[in-house]
Image (cartoon, rainbow, N blue to C red; front, side, top):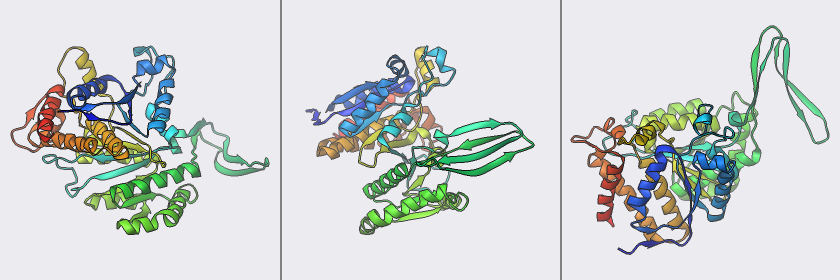
Length: 403
């Protein structure tokens, strides 16, 4: 068959360890045989980030702004143990964090549902998408350990040099700890608009939850900005689409989520989203069956897998051993990016290819061919556990029939 032609490149961000190996397999087995793949390539592997003093991460984010759609492989965020392993100049920051900040984006994570893998909460028959604010709060905190006799205050100085002080705590007789958090109205507004736009795209209700009854200024500011933007810019659009924006306290939201059937978007502040996305992924079955897309308020999209680099399998791969590593989330990062590229460039054949590749992947699993992690979860009879490459070959057999 003639290959599908692309008009505009995708930004391609390569990654680390086992997911880097899978990345190349997906391209070789499932993409380049069908598509004249056009990408602007950036190597975000830790070795190259170290060589470029992390400039490559910044360059990839700038390219994403230019082209509007990116696809990213999982990458290492180094800890102390990685310093000697990779001979690093410094402990480089998370590429995801850098890209999120530069795009002012919101992360949306959605589970991939397949027959045979029942969520731990059986009423969840439809996916729950977690929308995570990706700026500030504890991730940009300032914190100190303090000694007995310390008086801790929150001090602000306005443009005219006037100080305002609030006592945090007087550690008169004991040691302790303090922490300072911040956020920006502009970032909160971008988060709100990204959430509302995504809800309209997906035609799904959106919930937002904080703890404004306790945090009467910090969390309440989030609540107020969301409500103002919704009322002024989105209410009529939501009414026309037949969808709802709903605010509640975070503890009430958790109770509602557990009792629900799914099928909505749950917007969370940064830390809440970090925790709840892993909880939701695990409850649906596997973090390796979770899509992730970073969406900016001005409509820029960066797709990636929600999981890490599968370090343990990579070390086995280096020894020449076969691994049965789940590639589905990485594969769906590619399909998401290709579908969005096709949508923006008005290429229905590229969108159809992405749809067919997802269908072929799910069909493969539902017909009993899967990697070891899914075989341990699946209730299907006659399961066949295959290695990493064999799974992608099995997907290709079904894709070829759909094409």
